[in-house]
Length: 296
Image 1 (cartoon, rainbow, N blue to C red):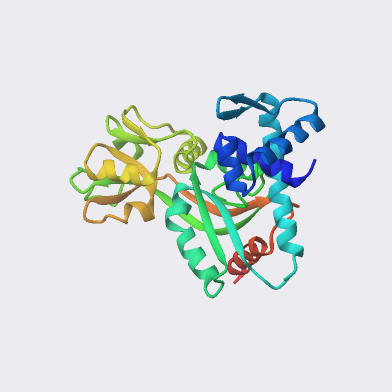
Image 2 (image 1 turned 90 degrees about the vertical axis):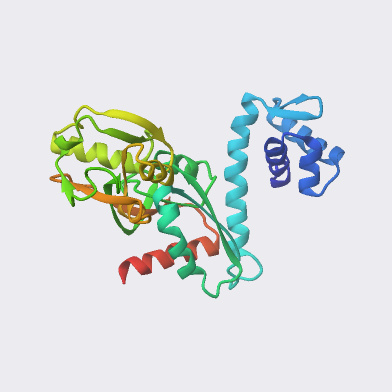
């Protein structure tokens, strides 16, 4: 088994086609097929099910694909760290982030970090907080930004700041002229909820649990998958919803931020990464930058 064979498997799995995979890797289709066949002989099992001009992974193939992703990622990191030019900082940093950090935190961090480092680019993958650890573990990303607890097993975290969750209401709503309301005033309101894996929504749930109160009886007008979708719905007065204060303040002509009396809705946001993983120089440089920034 070698890296070329694993890259061949990964290319076929991602493109769904031997022809497209061969073109992507810059090699002939027969040559690609031979690499897959060698890998299947070495493992003693079929990894791909051929269907006409396409191919899909078998159960063994899916397990092997996960291994291939991790191995290729680690190999690329080793090449970057110990390559021919140890002073060079070039490459792509893949950051998986929940919605709020992706929209309001990463752009500033990246601009501050890259500066004159023209050889570095950043790819941001947006998901909900519940998926950040999984995607890091699967090597779909190098780093994560979320409210993931710093005590998570196998991960290290560096604080990059705090944010606050507030209730966003339309400027036409009856709460718009109030700085804060009581939790009981939410009774009967149309509330726009986030999906279950949302860090913003979990902040609300945990704050309610820690104070021993529950949301009063209300109507769920809709469940949405992003902060901006909630803000857009609130602006149309389709309901009220919990978002970060940055999001609520982003459309002051349409949306007002209102706090809930007696409910602490602040949370820590952190840069998260696997403990002990070999990382490329440019990725480690970003971690060092965030660490120094947090200590200054």
